[in-house]
Figure 1: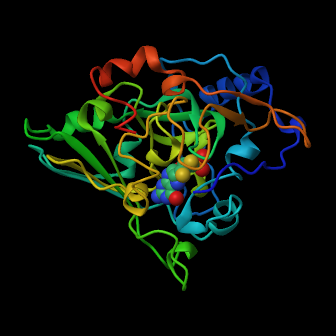
Figure 2 (figure 1 turned 180 degrees about the vertical axis):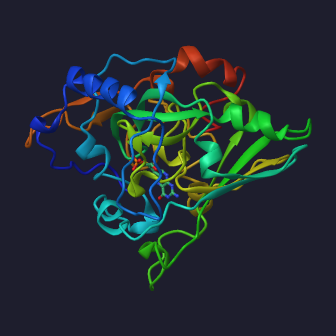
Length: 313
Ligand code: MTE
């Protein structure tokens, strides 16, 4: 990954929260749940969600920026590649296999996943490259899914895997392969069970656009964005620390934990500040200080008591 290059998003693209919120409550009453329309690619169906914990009183990043300034290397390495190249990706039908050290392994269909306790979860997101967004996700706690498969006592970690579909994901075919596939990620079991950790199925009141990881992706707001793996097809409970894509590709720069930490710089750039996408003008960036654990320290710092966060980056 490279350091931050500013995108061109006019300040006028910012949707005031009041307008967005009134639209949300309209969707809440109008939508009788999710209408999953066939094998559509460019569809966006309204999604019903109840208010969740962790409300955030910060300006939302414009939807246009959330859905056009992306990292999803399966569709290319430029920020605009995912939105430009994900049109042929088919997020339905879809299943997620949950297996490994569990009492009840199971393959979940998307329809079943959409019946989980789906909530509004607006989170701050911080990319390791130095930019950040505030995104109104819709999703359910990963813990709710894990409960259903009954993890065994020997399970200490959770590993995640993205789909491999070179025919629908142009970044997975051709001469230049930026990463080995499938993209894989992992969490410690207690991180995976933390109530902040969700599987997101939508954003801004609708199902996930393909470029944001349709139909289901992980969201772990106190860690750098690359932990939030997209388009998940498999979740496994395991005993040993799982492999992760960015650590595999450059262990000096990317570790297993990847907690947002302004005190630990990336070897090639500082992590002390960040550019909130949509803030500042065309010529001027407006960097703000990065907060420990991305501002979620009160909730998660306890998970790392006694752990050296410099050595375990
Ligand atoms: N998941 C997969 N499968 N492939 C990827 O390239 N990029 C990661 C993460 N999940 C990535 C992925 C990175 S680097 C970031 S910053 C976030 O997705 C970006 O999520 P967003 O585009 O929805 O903001």
